[in-house]
Length: 412
Image (cartoon, rainbow, N blue to C red; front, side, top):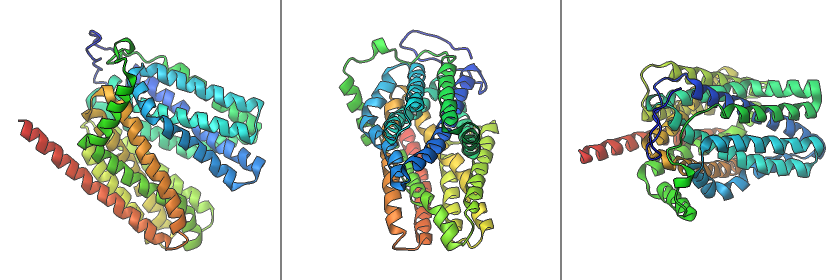
């Protein structure tokens, strides 16, 4: 990929090609790191349960991955905007590899928890950095298509990751699984060095008042109408997903009286829907409107949850989660693309870090609340409520679009 390089005050202008050296390097980096995360989580959860024999210990693993990242979110976002994002991804993947390597020497509950904390922080930094670097190496018209490629990769990993993890564990045990994860993170660190780009703002020219940059990022998230609207829509999506995700297995087994294998088929159909939706968006020559992607995705997710709520057979469930995969390929893509194309690149790190903090907090709370409510009310009502949240998000996306058009007309 070739760039037109200007002075330090002029941002890099990427070419209009979707398939190029930079995008391929970033994509391969993501493929290896995403697959490593799937293999690690599955392998280490099996080992953790084997060591502890406690579901509480397994739950603690997920909590420890999430909570520390919350405390660092505002600072991490400012650092992402301040530093060269290629070097951030390189460093994050090396830290991941080093953390996982500790488990080769000491596979105890305490070490697993310590590694969970490190990986949790690295995952948040990596996700926000990837979202921030994409607009800097990709033509504006290709951002939603590249986001679709990432979604397709994630869905493929979601389908095959458990099988790969199981294969490593069966052939080489937990040590072999951990070694594979270690190698994958190292490969991710190496591949990101291939990317060539000049950040819009060099570190030496960044403001020396770091605390002001942190405050500026928080101010954008709390006052900018676009960011507030997108955060609300994203929050509604993750509340609905958080509330229903852990309850799918209960819906299948206790309400539909289906065997446990049906859960695997259900998740597979969702993954297939994700792949189909992602490739459809990616193959379109005419770029979809980001608001259109949100509208379609939220409506599809609402329809899927409604079907699941009133389902009485495995076939309806499979159809519902195929549609859910299509929605999951569209709505998050539209959300990310809206922020990436309509905000200054210099603040994207802070925006993504802060919005992820908000929506992931809401998702965690919805998981806890739904777990409590499932013992009080019918699961079907929870799915209906989640569907209503999705459709509300769809309406809000169109209101946000209308408001933006109105502001543009006022400027004219």
